[in-house]
Length: 371
Image (cartoon, rainbow, N blue to C red; front, side):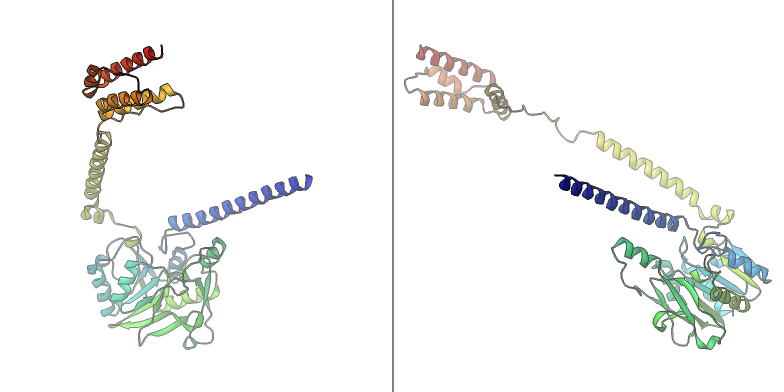
């Protein structure tokens, strides 16, 4: 008996361990999701691990003039280089995209810092600039929580192309889900596992397009010597004035907000939501049909059963048929029972009250017969 008790106690203890491990995994996953949700992304104003504040500060210390653009790309300040870091919080319309291509045709430099994740806006802009992305470069994420965590936290070490010289060092980035496809004629800068292109330069018009992973210059990666070398190389290649597109990271000038009419659109949206709420409340408050009447519950006692049966006949209008059936059943049980013709005629047209009277009459006749 004691062995069985110990085995049961051990089983309960094992269940608690499994439950605690499951709760811990959920907390880790929730923390990662919240971190990703509230991250400001590769913004030049962001201080978190994904931000580019350290890179912008370094470039300013090296003598560059950084301009934080709080306007659409077709109205952003002029500069020697334009930095587009992804993911962004808003889309780039065709007018803004045309302004980016115009910068390239005028001889400017555009830095396309890709996120490595699947994004519609990022993919469409890349297509217009002359390259595309290969999806699912690491396959589908596993369903096992521990293997998924390892998948999500995996890093790639990008090796420099031999053309960069013997002093170039590898850079560390988060392993991407998608990677850019280098078009023909592109200069490969860094390669990922298996020698796949991960960063390259591409001539566009009279300008130059640099495609690099955004995580390579994030605050959390610049402690790696190779990542710092990449930033120093960009410092020498981007010119004196660098425009950081912060408009698509949420930094919007007050006059742009007033021109966009977004406040009025928000008011209209709120009005529509209020009307939708009122319509839903009215629809739910309105009766969908006749009031529901609870049927008489049929219990084990004969009295309750008969009451329920009578209620069913009353609701269905079977009082006349029930009266005739009552007489037939009584005569079948006692062939000598004689029910008057008047009672039988009344039973054919009986309502709920007449059904009760017929039943009482048949009951009295049965009692007299027994006496």
